[in-house]
Amino acid sequence: MNKRSLSYLLLTVFLICCLVNCSPRPGDITIEHIDNPEVLSRGRHLVRGLAACGICHATEASPDAVLTGGRQMEDSYGKVVAPNLTPARSGLYGWKAVDIVNVLRLSKKPGGERILSDAHIGYEWLSDNDAYAIAAYLRSLPPIEKYNPRRSVSFFKRNTRGLFKTKREVKGYVPDLNPHNTAAYGAYLVDHVARCGYCHNTPGDLFNDEVYLGGGKTISFNGKSRVAPAITPSEIDGIGAWSKEELVAFLRTGLTPDNKRVDPQFCPVHFFAQASREELNAIAEYLKNTDK
Ligand code: HEC
Ligand code: HEC
Image 1 (cartoon, rainbow, N blue to C red):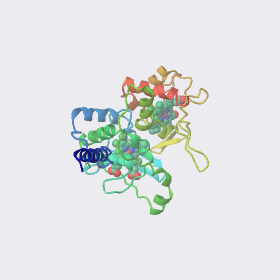
Image 2 (image 1 turned 90 degrees about the vertical axis):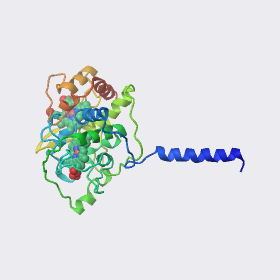
Image 3 (image 1 turned 60 degrees about the horizontal axis):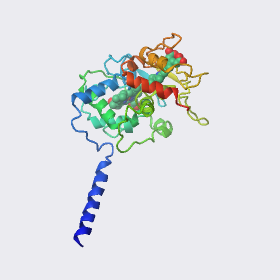
């Protein structure tokens, strides 16, 4: 082998190694120094803001409430109480950041046990940086003991319900979106951070597909329920008649243009109010144009 082909060979081997290393799988990702103040404040901003973990993982839907779990809701397995997310024995004691990311992405707990992904639908495409920032922030919380009832799901239920919902495995690196690309950033925030569709999509059934932001799903917390309305750009049954500014104002205050106050225990407007103006503008921009 001459010198030239040897150097080509070495270069090829080098490039292959790079490619293999550049596509880490979840679980392999180790983001160095994630416990730095910038990452923690990003995590805090998301958890207490658009990602609104506390709408379920606190007894009261407020960004200031401790994340010790406690709200009861329903998913396709039936009633469930959201667990304690603080690093207490009754919560996430001993969990590594990647363990928390794997719950959001793969619905998998550290021991390999799977949880139903209904409540977290959409978060699986959080960018790696955002998912790790959320995990780092939860790990930095003061541990507060609170034991919430755990449900046990029968083997039969586990194998007959929600089967089609647990097949969304996200593998590989999910990059951040550029906030200046407003429409794409808005779509990311709506679908994967604030997850408006988790409540506002019309549920599908055997014969009908789910309708994006079409409304009609009943949302229950602690035995009370509300129906989430349509938030499509339709002027008839959606929010097409609202201006972008009115939509941003709604997300900050929970007040509709005709001065109706939405119930903040159901639509997480107290959390959305913590988001930045740039984030809320991107959401409004995207929602005004979802069908164009
Ligand atoms: C719509 C309600 C809801 C929201 C919002 C929500 N969760 Fe959850 N989460 C749940 C429920 C319900 C469970 C328990 C599921 C089960 O046991 O089957 C859970 C389980 C978990 C677990 C596993 C804990 C354990 O001890 O088993 C973690 C970690 C978690 N959630 C993190 C988060 C984070 C981080 C956020 C915000 C980015 C979040 N969740 C937002 C409802 C929610
Ligand atoms: C946890 C469930 C949930 C999430 C997540 C959620 N909403 Fe809501 N939303 C509701 C419910 C329930 C109502 C009706 C509340 C009521 O009747 O007081 C509502 C009401 C609204 C309304 C009032 C519509 C009208 O015509 O009066 C708007 C607008 C709205 N939501 C927008 C959003 C946007 C935008 C997002 C995402 C950024 C979002 N919601 C996320 C549950 C949710």
